[in-house]
Image 1 (spheres, rainbow, N blue to C red):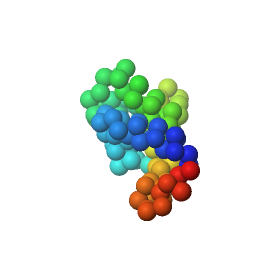
Image 2: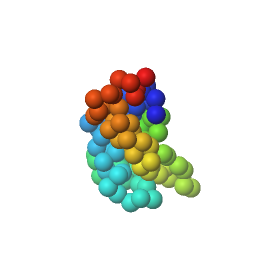
Image 3: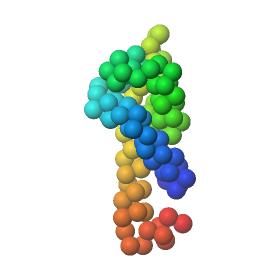
Length: 101
């Protein structure tokens, strides 16, 4: 994983609303959740929710697929695993600078 990509993912999760969306999806049905259900459960206006989901999708933390007339969001747990591995290997060791270059 490149440093810039990790930074973009961390930036996306650094917003309280996006982190709440990610947590909701991560703890929910592994098959995903319709956008309308996310909106209702978290009480986020549709336009705001759309913006935040787009940021999570653009960084690869969440995928969004259309199933008939419904948009369903799912976490990309492998991408989160990669981010966590990157952090442990590159930020939690004494030789972090050598590994990140």
